Length: 195
Image (cartoon, rainbow, N blue to C red; front, side, top):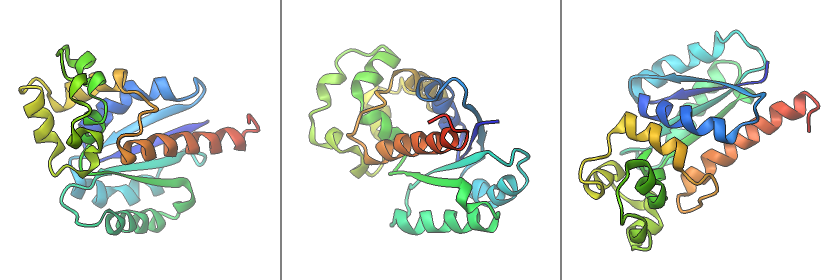
């Protein structure tokens, strides 16, 4: 079975992908979302989850926020080591949200406007901090302030998954997530001789 398995730091990432992936993936590609209770829980359990996963053809995508890690390459190397310890490194892809998942939303204020029913947000996209939101220190606080606390992590993320422009490139980490998912799916399709 063609399957992508997402190992996620938190429930808000699962909520985003739950509504975004049907817009992104081929109808024949199934997906499973496994949210953890934060980054420590993810790192503690991911090796065992990957190693014990029943479908030998499944591919794994690990998604974690950078948060306060000073260098996302060090974080990615740590996650890669855990994937390697599972014995299935070739089946794994790691994506880091710089700095938080909310960066993706701040990169597409028109989507935030539609998802939350707030007018006037899209016009703020040209402000310097929203042109390259991966540089912001605390995107979640910025989004809360911008939406006057109307954004709520899980429900807001679910709404955002239906609205985000999948080709938006204002956030390099979002662009890398989308291209990584497409690449993993293409690998599965190629292995079945479908492309």
